[in-house]
Length: 179
Length: 100
Image (cartoon, rainbow over all chains, first blue to last red; front, top):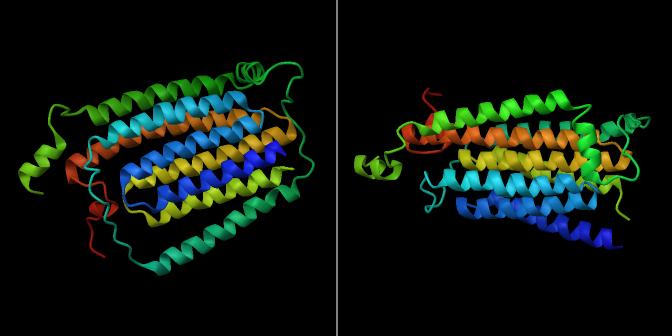
């Protein structure tokens, strides 16, 4: 009963906040509602007994990714409304139809695989964090290390891409040139 | 009673919302946001499957997806700032250089 109520409340709130993200014209509203949706999604992880994943979701998404977006948005002029031009609705309709078909096939695929069994079953008697640690540092050790190297590469790439001519103000130079 | 199907339907719905965002937005920042929505929807699906089968592999994949999303944001925002310096706009139409 409690699970049902929590599930429906979280679902409705998440869907509403994500619909706001994809429909709003204001970048700041989009950022705020995206952060709200990320926190609400962590609620699903807690419902699904994936406690560690829920905490990681809050820390990484709302702590790191959203803060990064907020810092990135300081470079752009976000106070004005976004003006977007929409052309060629036929192509959009064709693409949407094809993607919807693909999604139906993907969602129907589990019917064909009813004989799936657990590869790394959850250990009884330990918490979720311990079980995650056991699997992550034995079976998934090499992907874990590769992910660490990838994060380092991404950090260096981000610094090098964004760090050039950091002493100049973007919006001031844009106003000075007059577009 | 909430079953696996509830979570999978929710995951599909959120993924579709992200897909709509990717298809209809022209602002690159909004495209990044829509991508984040899609990644999160997939994470919910992975966690639900992991809970249903009593298997931790789904959660592991969700962790790696989060790591990849974090690095994607770092590099993507760097490229976005670079584009804003060149074109003084983050609109996709500003990248159109050829006629037609």
